[in-house]
Length: 185
Image (cartoon, rainbow, N blue to C red; front, side):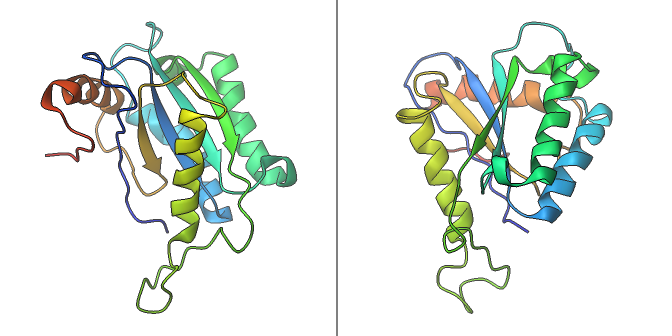
């Protein structure tokens, strides 16, 4: 399982939070299962207090490989997209949904849960996915669209309702506090 990584990256030094994204990353068949489970779990830990109101936060589902070559991963993403198209309850907390294929090679898409002691490249997969997303934010598919994002790996599980509202609130505080990365207090 991926290490817990929560990153809020301010892409522009604006005094307001601006357009944001929750980047949900998955790589393995186990994580595809977690992605599917989180769709229903978010009903009990609603991302926001008022679904249906205009949101400046998009959900971006990021697959380490190519979605076009994996029917199971594609089906999981399509189930989210279908829920958004039908305005299912919690999906109203987000402005929209997008997907992104990092298209890592098998050599790049590596994660060893035994850590650095057994393999000095133990997190090359997660690191490469992060690199691809940052490139997409600055010069690629999402260039100019987002001011910040929340890097939400599969082992980052919301445990209280309105977690997305809290993210937006904290992101709005960041520019004034001149932070690059902030974890929960």
